[in-house]
Length: 132
Image (cartoon, rainbow, N blue to C red; front, top):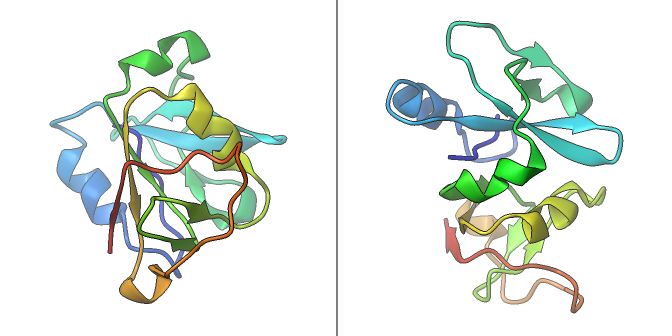
């Protein structure tokens, strides 16, 4: 399961990570240049502060050839709409990651972040479901 360490203005995912850490294989993204690199989360090791003050895993890298083994991805966003379109923070990290994933994707946000229409372009990949 792909999760993310939430920032203070995002829905708190830390409890999800703690809850599932011994039940599921948790994968966390790490910012490397202009891309997100996916790492296994090892509950016995510490995370470190990475780009944008996000806690990142120092666990083994998941090679892109293994992205097909990910069965669920929880995706952050600044805003989402009913069609699953998302607005990120403007760097395009998830815009580049989402086309590489074949799993079910869920965007999570607060109710005030769920809006009528998110501007999007044909190359944008919507999430399958939004929970708010």
